[in-house]
Amino acid sequence: MEWYPLKLTTPVRNHVFGGQHIQEHLGKKNLQPRPVAETWEVSDVEGSGATVKNGDLAGCTLRELTLEYPDEVVGQGWKGPHFPLLTKFIDGSGMLPVHLHADDETARRKHKQPNGKTEAWYMLWVAPGTTILAGVKEGITKDELRAALLRQDYDAVMSRVEVKMGDTVYMPAGVLHSFGPDTLIYEIEQTSNIQQTAMPWQMENGEPYPKEEWHQNIENLLDEIHMKPQPKPQPGLLIKDGDNQRLFCCAGPYFALERWKLQSSYRHSFQGALILSNIGEGTEVKYKGGTEQLGKAESLLLPAALGEVEIAGGEVLVGYLPDLERDVKAPLRAAGYAEEEIEGFVHEQRVYE
Image 1: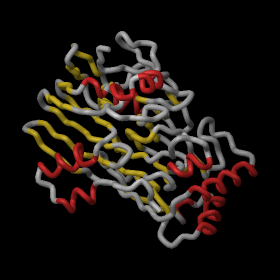
Image 2 (image 1 turned 120 degrees about the horizontal axis):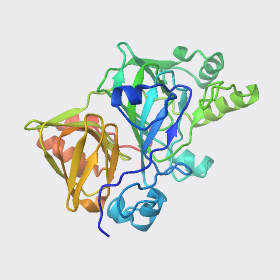
Image 3 (image 1 turned 30 degrees about the vertical axis):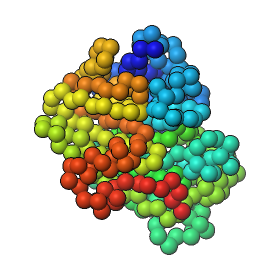
């Protein structure tokens, strides 16, 4: 098998909170003129999985490749029922639902799914003064939370935090959250579509839930919630290599995310799959067998078997399944960051309460 950078189909979601930010701020092409809420850049979610568009593997699904060639696609020793990472551009022109995602244990026990969903948001564009809702205020009881959710008084019980462009918010599974309006993010997360919502309306079309169903949704949410975590926006840790910059946005057991600003060509070696998502002008990716173009707001999946690529320049977000010591801690340590700062940056745990 001669491996190469994979261009994938990108499922689109037209939820009610969407707008035109993905087209206007990022320049993504070939989207419908109607409001767009999400483009799933790399997805192996059941029923919304990606298919390869380019090269000899065109027509193959990401699921098929992951199951047949796990070492070559994901990385040596990978075992799992699907590709482990899901990435999206999300347009929060309107407010997203107040919701949460199950953790791994809850997903397996309650939903019969292989994993839950921890996620992270990179703030691509936000209006001045934009805020997010992230976590439950200290001291709030579940009874108080239930009453506030039924009143739709989210600020009474949730922490509201201001964000700015370039911030990253690491959101553990089980934590209640929302963002928008006036927000455009890049999201990286575990491959899962499980969620519990607090809203009386459906995000797909804005139609109200029947009262009994809405109340049951809130009870389901309260059964899965983690009350203690208080996610905060972080600026990340920067490494400079001449004119090129590598910003470590976040890192944990499920994924790491970096932003590369490249003034010149940059060569990078890797042992596991990389997801490149372009947030600047067009660029190109050179690999052993040739060159692949990466246009505005496009993404490429680089199979682990490629091993090394050279990016011509530009600005890209880079997501991957990390070996935290090798891929994150060691380069930060070599760049001069103190051990305490590194340990405070890296999310080690899978269980948060």
